[in-house]
Length: 125
Image (cartoon, rainbow, N blue to C red):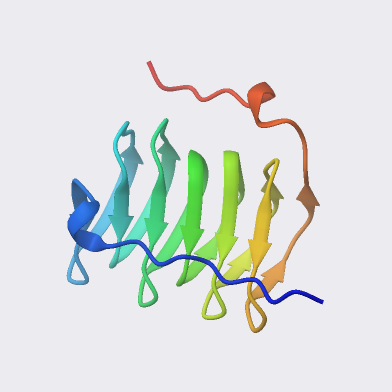
């Protein structure tokens, strides 16, 4: 069996980072890659990629292009291209994505549905 490795993102390549000391509640919409390193609660409707850091805690319904997770998430994920669960990630919720990668050690409690990503639409205007 081939071992799967997920590539880490360089923070310098990201336009926006919600730092460790940020505790944000509301709705996020974005087109360019964004990283959450602190706490977020609410809804994320994005056409861009979402990265969730290893110390982050997110409670949200997420719709994004790519969702790469190292921290904790309570909520459902809908991704148009891919979901990446690193070994440190914990997910309590359902995942819908055409592609998913899970490192050994990650925790996922939910239902995974894999469909063509072109069918997924966001509410972003």
